[in-house]
Amino acid sequence: MARKLTGFLSRFYLLLIMIFLYAPILVMVVLSFNSSRSRVVWEGFTLNWYVRLFSNHQIMDALINTLVLALASAGISLVMGLLAALGISAMRRRGYTITMGLTNIPLLNADIVTGIALMLWFIHFMPLSFHSVLIAHVTFNIPYVILAVLPKIQQMNISIYEASRDLGASAVYGFFTMILPQLTGGLVSGFFMAFTMSMDDFVITYFTKGPGFNTLSTMIYGEIRKGIKPEMYALSTLIFVTVFALLLVVNFLPGRQEEE
Amino acid sequence: MSNTTRGFKWLSGPYLLWCVGFTVIPLLVIVQYAFTDTTGAFTLSNILAILDPIHSKAFLFSLEIALGCTVLCILLAYPLVLVFRRLHLSRGKFMLFVLILPMWMNFILRLLAWQMLLSNNGIINNLLIRLGLQPLAVANTWISIMIGVIYEYLPYMVLPIYNAITDIDEGVIQAAQDLGADSGTIFRKVIFPLSIPGLKSGITMVFVPSMTSFVIADLLGGGRLQLIGNIIEQEFNRSMDWHLGSGLSVALMVFVLISMAFTMKSENVVEEEGRQWRVN
Image (cartoon, rainbow over all chains, first blue to last red; front, top):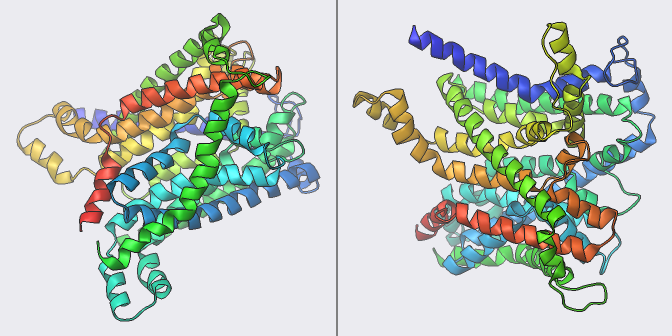
């Protein structure tokens, strides 16, 4: 009886948290099909916003900026973060402590301070636009890659790399055949984390972007007073559904195979 | 460590250069702005401006929001993680999936959705009125800011605690059961102590952003309630007093780093793991 009750309470609590997490998302999805431009009143079903989305140059430009930024910053962070993590794990205690301290700064510091500090530095030598935002995103993304890859490096079997070197493999060949395959899991999750953080960032982009360059977040923020275009809800729903499908494939297909 | 892999340490060269160029130098630049006035002369007034009544009020309000948010996230996270464990959902990546997915709905749009849910003639109040209940009056109050920060940062509390708790060997818990511990005792004596590293990293990941966010207060506080982040943002984008804005940022940063150093005092988990590998 008590076991049943706790079982029921567990499920009920899970349901409440799910409602809390997904209520705002449901609101956006419903609004993307609402034929009214008004925010709260339902006036009937339409796919109009999905059609008009693709001819809205402003939204499409911001989408492309956001995606290019996320891909480029996650890619650069992946390479630099992997090399950094390999280096860090070979350091002696003092170098290790200093480097990990530096790595923690962007993670611990408030976004607003990071964004403002970068902006104040950038204006000394470069215009604020795509490149400044890219540098900023790489800066806050590398720590996520390092933290994802470092534990995998610590778990990996380094002897097979050393054996391959003793048997005459070049450092590069040994790296690609002996080390990289052991780190795939950490690299994938590091890249995914970095991509997500870049897509979801608002504050740091806002301070480092300069006029004329917009990501989806900064464009939406600029439009709040004029009213959000319903096309934005449609785009967000599409992004959400795409990621949902991707995650479903990535997470649950391999898991099922393992169980069998 | 063999001679073959000792040379690996040079691989972090590009990253260290990057750190100096885009982490260390920007912080020196903001400190320089903070300690000078528009003529370039040294001054402490930008830093001390945090004691000004308007600023200190916003600072204390931010602190209240951040503490409240951190405590509530902890209280929500533990039962959630335990429920996942009980329902055997902790295997696979279901938890990660459920918590990360909402991050793909744009940050600003998520907050606008909460604005619509919570506003006085919003969705929740419409539902309450239809059910014959009293509507809520939380729009533009600290309560809606609190809901916003909890919504945004709860995953950052849940994930590290979850990671710490799923790492606990099932055998340890079974041993406690065999020795007669009830589930309350198991939580207090086994699960909670082993989850502390996760809890600490959760606290650092929730406390700082919930204290410094300006967008959440902007959208859900109706512009009347200001966090310290709002004041700093306005110094940069409306008042154009960059030196004052930098001074307040540096004061905030020092506070954040000191309080985090305090939380992380015994937090050497990553370092321990790192050393293990180097010994081998």
